[in-house]
Amino acid sequence: MSREVVAQFWEAMASNDFGFAARWLHPDFEHFMPQTREYLKGREKFAVLNHAYPAKGRWLFDVQSIVSDGPSAVSDVVVTDGTTTARAITFHTIKDGLILRQKEYWPEDYPAPDWRKPWVKLVARDPF
Image (cartoon, rainbow, N blue to C red; front, side, top):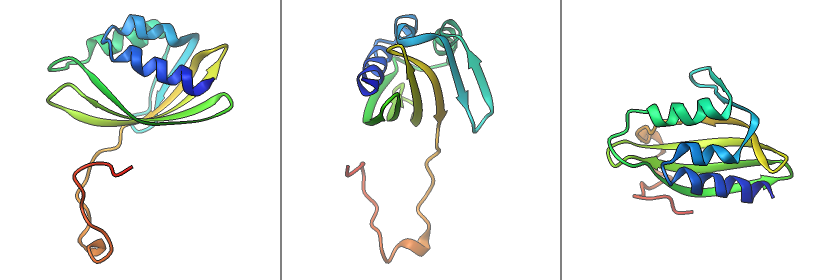
């Protein structure tokens, strides 16, 4: 069930109606981004924060994968507004059929180190 909840959440996020997407969040929803140490409590605040983000266009969400086990799920999603593209790795905890907690990482791309060249090749897109 947790996989389905997370998939429906990302589908709702793709509507760019973040108030609508917040319906998949538990009333006691908590969101944490460890890299910046930002903590948010409440699905309404989540919706307002996403509406306020200074995007250059509509957000598109390309779900790369969702892995789940019991009440936990992890999603790998590529997010773009047509100008900026980023990747979100999100750990979700499900309670009562809704997302209770999210711990979200936004890793930055970086160039491949030269020392690995003998064993790897650069590819244009995710091969998986």
